[in-house]
Image (cartoon, rainbow, N blue to C red; front, top):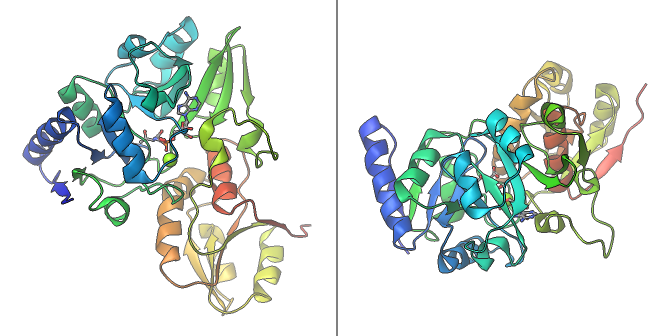
Length: 349
Ligand code: TXA
Ligand code: MG
């Protein structure tokens, strides 16, 4: 399949590209489009066959449901049974990087929900994503636009690496502002929320809108053998670079001591403040992950850095384990999964 690249260089290009992309989607095709979190691989969310095509383009297991992207939060009630808590969350966080799991209405294809009786609803804030859904007049089903198991794409070149020849078109937008996928919450009875996937909207942000918010155990650790996942995506290997990726839990001194004993040609994703300290290591290339004091920069860069470092032939890529607070929780969750839970505990003072 030839993949059309749709330009966004000028406002006129954006308009033409959105029109062309909507036309492709209306005819059952697939279009990759930018969002504020990561790029999405979209198809008509009301067309089961288009959803099937998404699964095959991505190499995704059919039991892992898709998010339905709507142009306005008020459209959610067309496809899901909403509630006062949903309305409060929508008012505060939509359009934006929040996905809410709600009971599904009957018109949503089984291929989208993977046969579950719930559906994931998100209203993206990115102007191109929003304009595209409006131009279609139907919701867009879209997972992240990576091949299953790889880090989600946060820039056009990484989308092209995975999706050229697999989709009808790619809208060549800007780099994703956030860089990690949306926060996913499920609404539980009694005004309670269950956090299934952390993102830029943190539990601290959500707490004032509900009675209680619980973070699913699977956010912090692998599922136990035989444990049923609360969200199907929890059971799949995720975000992993091909190179061995290992997390180090310790202070800068203990990390340096540990890396000194490692073989040649390793890489470390290092906080900006610690770059000069680690640059003395002759066997290790240091890559800036942004300041320790603002983990949103690390979040913005993580997937992209993993993809870039993957092509450099390092024997191993290391990174410090971030503190799981604020946006750090989302970063922590993606990193432990990218590292296949390889965390080395180092002695700290
Ligand atoms: O930021 C994002 O959310 C991006 C952009 C493109 O919007 N999308 C994204 O989709 O990350 P995906 O498919 O890569 O991740 C969606 C996750 C999966 O882990 C899936 O299992 C879960 O949402 N999910 C979808 N529907 C669900 C449902 N009804 N119940 C529980 N989990 C669900
Ligand atoms: Mg994904």
